[in-house]
Length: 445
Length: 141
Ligand code: HEM
Ligand code: HEM
Ligand SMILES: [Fe+2]
Image 1 (spheres, helix red, strand yellow):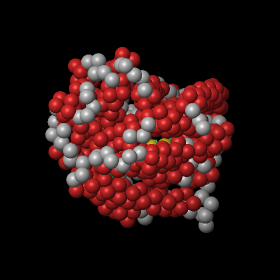
Image 2: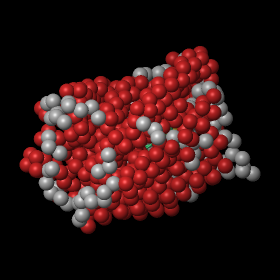
Image 3: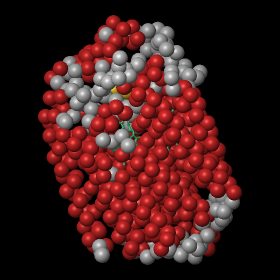
Image 4: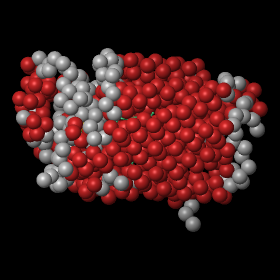
């Protein structure tokens, strides 16, 4: 709380807010198309909308993680970031690559590989950008006075996330090989190394918000990330059931992915245990809401809704249906969107000196976005189950069964509207804080 | 009670052990499993051409293949079995958006060579052993 360079985090958080709003616009385009209104088909076809929606999600989350790292690492390592000028270069190049990628999707400059649509040429720029980011973070950490477990876990998560981007850049003539390595990125990110990032941020917030002893918190952090890799690495097999890979993945993927919720359960129990144990006098209740919220919602979205379709006997029916979209939304929201919101809610008042955390707007943001997202998840679930029944069980033609699902998409649009109002409250509250100042950072005790 | 050092050991040890098992299985899958199950010897130039088109046009942005992609348009793994070659050719070479049931596909208006490449790709995909996916509808009358 006393390092001037921490305020660079603000730019990354602001970028996250803007890209999130844009992501939502494309979500509505797709929801209307599913409900039968594809008026934008000629300009923004569904595949453009979906590539944009998913990649904006990934980019705003990564921008949020980077902001979190730039805020947390100086404080944990007890020194300023090695170079603010390099951070500025890294920030602007990230923003430019993001904008170019999204613009490219609108003129067909992409790869048809879900979540990895950014074309090869831009991938190299992404790699350079991320290397610069990692360089700044790691050099700061290793020159610092302390190498805390929290900082090491966070840095390790970010480092391996970068490394795992590489297998996604190889071209394969064989569609099955392509798919096999695509999951090294997508699965090993969200059910592997990103959980380290989440765990690191969560531990940092719990130390600050509850005042519980660091040693205790960091011990449990090790247990949680241990559970993550114990289950999540072989859990990759739950994506190998039906892509032309050997049958042994059914057994291995089924068993180990069914253990994956343990890590999320661990985070939920951990957050609440530390909250109970701690002194309940930190004034920033909004940050506490988001922190405890992310612990519960990640268990619900990733843990419970994950295990709901991870067993091969279930997955063979639900694989590649709207059931997957149900899980995808609550998992990404609960784990990664909410952890980014948590660190923003905690750090923004400290960076700007404006303590806007107990305002009605902050409360509306929390409740409306979460209730809206639960509603959206429920709508996807209803649509997904109906789709599985009609198309997979009864054997109706794809489009005949899809046309029976319009009502669920109107429910989705209603819930998404509630969600969006919550997000708008959050973003307005964000910008009301104004810019970060040196005085604010120095003044904090 | 568990000490912090033991917790660290659990994390590092578990990670290394499970990562090595994963790596060994992956080597087996990539070197012999996938080639066998996908009949990789049948991947001709036309099949690769079809895959390139599938990739360049982001077909996965609406459809699924092997159950992967978006959920806006039909699963294509067994499209040749389900619809037959002539039907699929008609969809791919259509000059107006294909919209049998109201929902529109992009009108690609592919050339004859491109259509043939895509058909070769779908035929190869059709034969990949997917461990029983997609399942037979069991409530069909
Ligand atoms: C925060 C963590 C998680 C996130 C963000 C997440 C997100 C996603 C997303 C976006 C997909 C669709 C991927 C695609 O088709 O390209 C997916 C698929 C899947 N997830 Fe997760 N997930 C998480 C954790 C889990 C966990 C813990 C489990 C199991 C207990 C799980 C089980 C599955 C399964 C089985 C699929 C495949 C669905 C299908 O066959 O279509 N996920 N996940
Ligand atoms: C107004 C809000 C939103 C709406 C209306 C919306 C709607 C949609 C729709 C219709 C799809 C496409 C499903 C398909 O393939 O046919 C989709 C995909 C997806 N969206 Fe959203 N979305 C919204 C917000 C979000 C947010 C906030 C997140 C993340 C926190 C998110 C994450 C995803 C993911 C991961 C997918 C891919 C899912 C999969 O293929 O399994 N969306 N969204
Ligand atoms: Fe997974």
